[in-house]
Image (cartoon, rainbow, N blue to C red):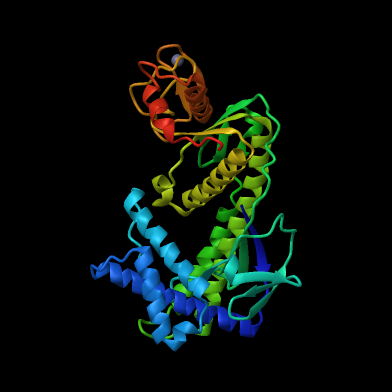
Length: 379
Ligand SMILES: [Zn+2]
């Protein structure tokens, strides 16, 4: 589990962190070059090369070996994933202007003394201890966000307090106007529209940014950077509000249901369209993330159901309609049993039924059951 805290590094510490990030970024890019040039070194080989490079280059030796090894490890992982996970590209170069600093340290590379975080190389940073660490952390990630704030993310072990078992089961369908429609209306999550409310303000700052954008090869003006920061701030604000509501909602759902069937929503669907839809996407993403995390942690049965056919199957008799429902059609009408139901409520019921039936059927939702093997189950 990760526990995150705000850091308040002084000017010296910030310089040291940025220098460390510069070295790690160089190593990452070097590894990418090695891969591209056909050398394809393994992680062990990369570590050997690092040792060699450190013995000949004083500037590299100035940095922490732990952080440098960790960035190579992260690179190795990204490379492995690029082969194993579908749709994941090879690790690419980290440009200075496009990536935010992120440094990893294992136990050998950091300690906590007198409430302050000490990193390898004698960097001491005060931490805002917003809550107590449940145990000694095994590693820490020190990173900066788009607003320039620094954070420490500790990996700690926490005894899993398996929540008491409950009976209920719930099906959840995601949507634009109502973020989550469920089989039990009291758990519906209406769309809060934080992003939408920010959108006008955001558009204003983005226009400002466009006006002040420096020509190619020229340094950014102060006004441009100010506008950029303003935009980042608005984004962050909306994201935090989204996360907050999502957390409260997910807690309620997880506390009262043993089986949670969730539509496996893929945001790619809507992301190309309007700002409002993008915003709704973000709200769904936050809610889904919180729900899955909380659910698995509490030991609930969380199953992700692929969205294919959920809107065109009848939740009463499980007959699949011949035609897809248009996006504007809000009511589902079953041709075979005459059921008449709100489109989203029907979809939520189908999602739940898919999971509860647990065995394949000749028609209707059978294929959905077989492909929901990817569903998450509590470990
Ligand atoms: Zn029907």
